[in-house]
Length: 57
Image (cartoon, rainbow, N blue to C red; front, top):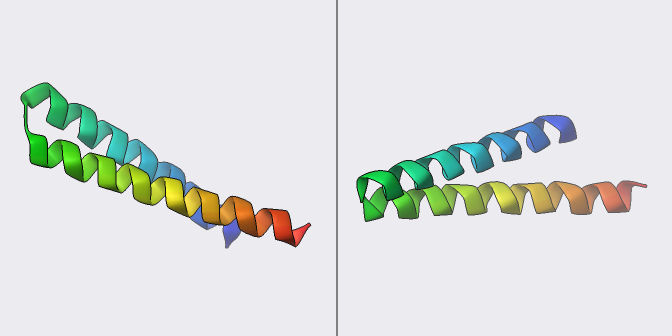
């Protein structure tokens, strides 16, 4: 399950980064903010999984 969560984190980060860039390109501040939030959610998920890995070993 950990691999699944790591993949989900990477996907959220990429999706958020894309959404942020698109929002910035068209001047849509809301889309930019949503992209940042999604990217942060992916970052948090990745950090959680890395912490779990540290305690697993």
